[in-house]
Image 1 (tube, rainbow, N blue to C red):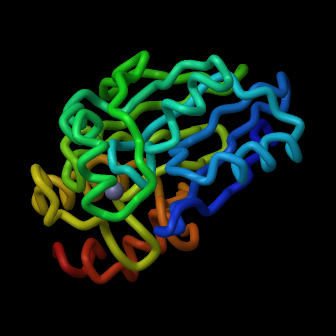
Image 2 (cartoon, rainbow, N blue to C red):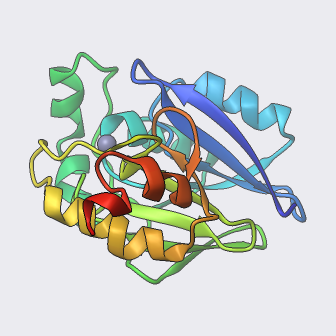
Length: 216
Ligand SMILES: [Zn+2]
């Protein structure tokens, strides 16, 4: 296996922060560090990983609120999400306050991502897939060789992301899942932002929101 992955549930929302390590180089990325920095760093140490970057799927606080502090502490860049989520990250302090969430400052990622681009972790490559709907700038990371995807809050085992937030769009979300993710293959396993993992094939068969049977 090219990648080693440790999932660390963080924040009061039990968000699945992942540490993704390239086995060949020992280099790693932290995907969606929403909080609980000490827990994340303990997992990094346990994996004997050398963190080289932070990857963000979208700008919600439970996915990105610890990014800037980690960036400064580890001297590493933040890549993602797509720029449509700038307004979420700009308003991070307000959102945190409203949700009674630990304070986070607004920040500027070092690299906004676009659909079709590639991000790297050590020697491993990940395809960037822009999947708007839950948020306008949401991205998914796909590691094709290991058939593994990080989908943030686009789709969950048995559910889909909320679209009742500002700039959320239900039709966009369904399109992202059915037109961009499902065609990648039934055997792609995904790690969602919350709850257990699943595969696109399983959701295609049984997810009450996006199953094939609903779309004839
Ligand atoms: Zn979210």
